Image (cartoon, rainbow, N blue to C red; front, side):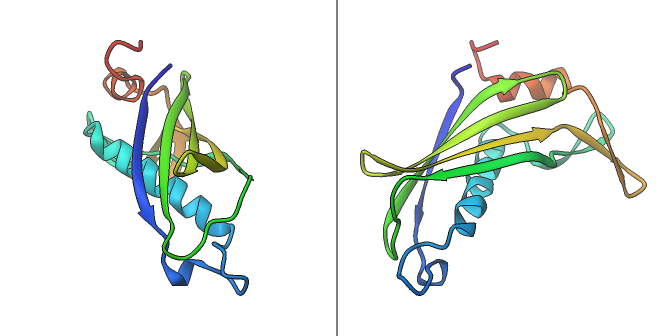
Length: 139
């Protein structure tokens, strides 16, 4: 599995804490930011209609390890890498990079769900979506 995608994020003052470094909660927001951008880049959305179904991707596991500080006005590269596409879920990692230095590593597992009547139910990832998550030549 080698599907990769990246975006750059400029750290805002409002994302920092009293010590002048980025508050840890923002790393999770940025993980979602790059995930949404990745979905859009392959013609998908994290909340979409596909073959008559309203599909969403709730997270069932999220983690982030921190290796160094990030500060106001830093330019962070968020590099998403799809690591697994299973029957009903997919996993990805996000490398948070300042230049060549990795400052954090995030990991997420999301499950493909149908939204019906205000409730969610997991389903097998539809083949058309799976193909886009895996990427051309990576199946």
